Length: 94
Ligand SMILES: [Zn+2]
Image 1 (cartoon, rainbow, N blue to C red):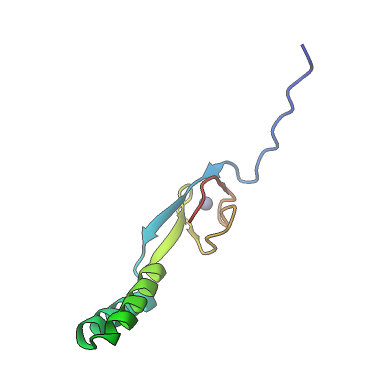
Image 2 (cartoon, rainbow, N blue to C red):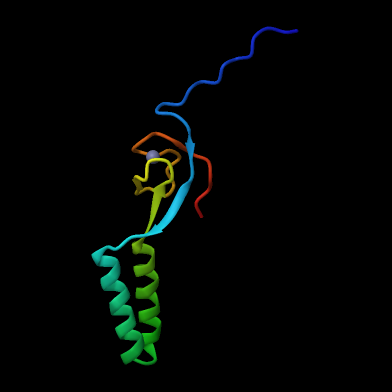
């Protein structure tokens, strides 16, 4: 038998977590969504294009990344660990 197992370095705060995507109400996102809908309905055909872009941005803005472990909001979607509980994210956010 060969020696002891090297203990894994404990992570600060501990553990691993997944990102969770959630919709969150926020004013700028909703204004964009609403503006997009108005454009799509009333300014054919270019409004359709502009409206679609606004809706796309609005949807992105109301969609937030959440740490599954502590429920904290993660602003930086590329973050490798949670800024609140230091949990390391094991999933990939596309
Ligand atoms: Zn967390």
